Structures are given as structure tokens and as C-alpha cells.
Image 1: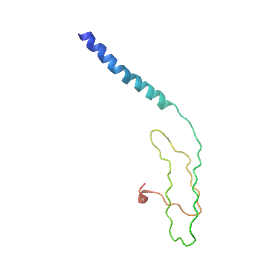
Image 2 (image 1 turned 90 degrees about the vertical axis):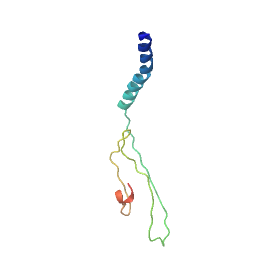
Image 3 (image 1 turned 90 degrees about the horizontal axis):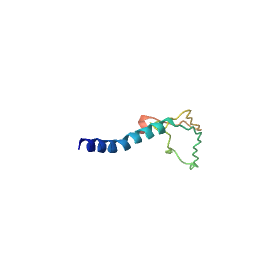
Length: 84
């Protein structure tokens, strides 16, 4: 009966261990991409204030953002006061 418990424990743990190994191997893979994300807006001439929302990539465990630049004709406010 003790052997049955050990066999059951191994059978239950094997997928978890295998999953951890696969996840570890996936974490070691990497790729590099160069992306250009563009927004163009035609504004009414009488506009006094314009608010545009544009998604920016974020660093997280799955991706690392490098060399992010923003080119604009006017200042682009960003930060905590805008909810980010």
C-alpha cells in the first residue's frame, strides 16, 4: 500500500515538474522586434483642447521595452497625474 501512495505521488507530481521545466525553457527564449506605432489626427481649427489616448508598451515579466521615443509637434504629457 505504501508503494501505491509513492506511485500516485509521482504520477501527480510528474506533470507539475515537467510543466516547470517547460516554463523555465520558455523563459530562456527571447526575440527582438522593432515596432513603429503611429497616430495621426486631423483636428478642427477651432479646437482649444484635444485629448488623445494612445497605448504605450509597458515593461512586465514577459517583455522589456527599450529605446522608446515619442515624436510630436507639441509636448506630450505623461505620468502619474494622467493615471499611469
